[in-house]
Image 1 (cartoon, helix red, strand yellow):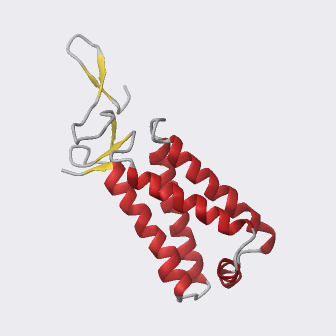
Image 2 (image 1 turned 90 degrees about the vertical axis):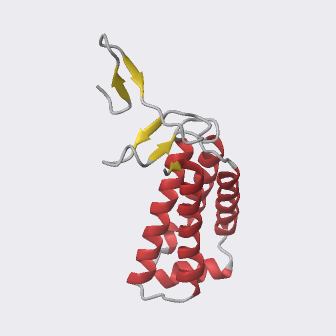
Length: 159
């Protein structure tokens, strides 16, 4: 039996649901506090997800041929120049996944949490490189806060 189902009398199964105002009612229980926190399969409201997607795609455009402040950031954290090209496709895919996740269950949720992981790694790279300036505090931590806000507002149901 999956954690997404509960047993009905007579041996049948039904999806577990939460009524936290999500557009799509099927949710995944979160950890051991499943009765208190649920992660939605589709975003509600969708506007924070759209804003994050636009930011991600815009950031990807800036990384295509890195503008000076992004190139300086890559150099400051020691990101090898031969891998700079990887950043744009990652950000474009995140933006596309966020937009598609408005209609495809759990895709937007996964993309949002993947961006949170991305910015946690970016923060770790800044700390390891002892880059405690604007790149860390405005760019990496600022984007992490935005991603967490989108996750909480659009995907996480709290009591």
